[in-house]
Amino acid sequence: MPGKTRSVSEARDLQRELHEMVGSFATDPLGFVKWCYRWPVKNESGPDAIQTKFLEQLGEQVRSRRFNGIDTVMPIRMAISSGHGIGKSVLGAWLVHWVLSTRVRCRGTVTANTNDQLEKKTWAAVREWHSYLINADWFESNANIMFRKNYRTSWFVAPASCAEENSEAFAGQHAKDSTSLYLFDEASAVPDKIWNVAYGGLTDGEPMFVALGNPTRNTGEFHRVCFGSGRERWTSMVIDSRESKFSNKALIEEWATDYGEDSDFFKVRVRGLPPNADEHQYIDEGRVRQAQTNVPYVIQ
Image (cartoon, rainbow, N blue to C red):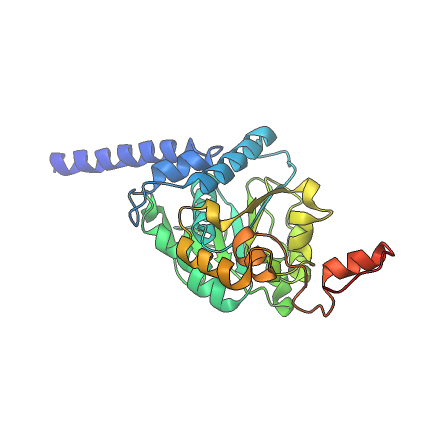
């Protein structure tokens, strides 16, 4: 019995030390990612340069606000517009785990452009990387929610469809003494109505809104926050897939040959730039802007 008692006591001490260590990364998301996963994972030893830069900027914003658990701070608003294959879904999973692990009674909603993307990629990454967490046993996760054990209704992050008729799922998410997190994946195709409802959850506590995606449209809220009038209030990064060590360089070269680097396909899928022509636009934006200058436009 004495031996068993000591084992229980030692386990409690280890848990206390783990809580203290994980909690120390509340303002350091990069440190959390490096320390709280059982690296190496999938032959990687940690985040790459692009992911590192994003996490460093996020940490700087958190530290500059100095949230004290009482007084509301300005929301953290960060966006990545990029080509394919730079590790955005994995980055989103890390953000979910960091917030859940370091913020008592946090609440979050994760969405993506389609239910298939949300279920099979975005939320699948959250569930997969949960298994690599050093503090994985603090949480339960399934297809519908990830939550702190014994606090399912007050300390959680959950996926939600971005269908406009589901907009109420994004309303009323407040955490006055903690963090309210919104994570939008493939955000270019998330309807503006969903964005506008989510903005209402940024009014108290330490709110965070992170939007990631390929810029498939040259209109809409994602375009506005990355390239338009909303950019000054957001910390946005534009990433060319060729800068990432994860992207398929051979395939990118093939696309460059087939489509050309100035094509809308290449701009969106590789360079992280919006297309000249919107998916629903008959006359592309370049010609519209040319016409607005009253200079004759000559079709090549």
